Length: 464
Ligand code: ASP
Ligand code: MG
Image 1 (spheres, rainbow, N blue to C red):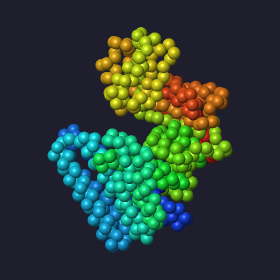
Image 2 (cartoon, helix red, strand yellow):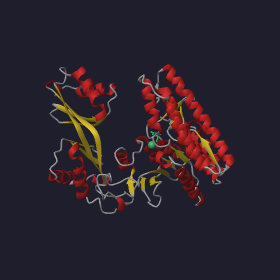
Image 3 (tube, rainbow, N blue to C red):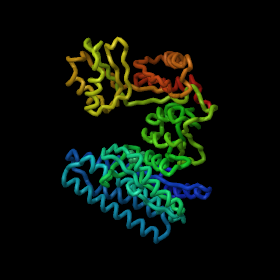
Image 4 (cartoon, protein in one colour):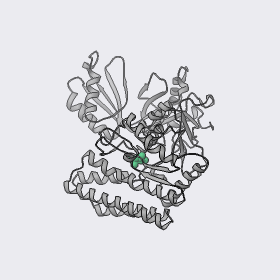
């Protein structure tokens, strides 16, 4: 079970998490829990690091005070036993003091390397996770707190986005966690963090706690992974846009991968790989609404859950860049040079399309990357292989997802007729040959009405 940051940001919620684990254990299950930093902690730490890096004056005292206060307040109200409280306080105080020292060191050097940043970011999980472990002990459940490193998660040294070394990790985690379970202990592990082969702390990418959970699950051959967060599950559309959006009961891994980045529940995209391999289902559940069954993600959902279209996803805050020019047509290597320049400038391309005349290539990037992207293209390629760079700043990608689309005729026509009836102009289209999704770009002003039109066209508002 993985608990997100909104599931542990108050003493009440921590107690509920402990109860939830206890309940499922009483029902005859063995549980390993993975915990994220409390909500906002990772972002706050990042912004403090950013300010130090930019030479802005930051008040370490203020940050330390609010971090100390919030964690201590949760701890004090989540635990009743005096002895357990004493142990918990002493551990948390120790971690807080270490954080204080690290921050002062960084301020002194006025430098934040990716390595230091990972160390700094690890404190969020190192503060939240032990609290849950002590809260479990407080209600009579033996529990042991482990960092990702102690649990055996070994990664490369690509700080900020480290990749776990699978085989060794599986072996080590299995050897560490299995005996604890055999002894009736509930292991509680920090999400998001591991260590490289030198023992240096690494992080595995934002939202990485999901990934930690699936890694551990595949290492101990778990029956299921449950990702507890604050949404009811994967949905037919964003409920903020479509009022009758429904929770999807069953979704395939392939479909979930398409939805993970864009739906109401962000799932770390690499989370799926460890469990796809070992065929372990993932359940998405709402810790604030435990009666809702949530969504289950499996390799082969039941026939009855298979639909042509399952969900309409909107990817907003994106921009479209169209590059064109006489020399592009028929020159091998043009696309590669364009993408290479963007890659070198750390611009991630979300969607690509090129017409067979090869006279232009359209790309969608995050809006936050737009300036970097256009500057890089203009400086390096304008006037050479490309003549023009056109930009549409406020674009939205609409991605229609469903494995039932494969081989079915008329889906595209249905989609685009509905869009046309809503008087929306389609600017760019892409469909992978897997036919699992069809994505197109519209002006962001048209985003919501397009999502609503398609949601009703495919009758996704009816309970599935
Ligand atoms: N605390 C980390 C983050 O905010 C990891 C996670 O929440 O899964 O990205
Ligand atoms: Mg999170």
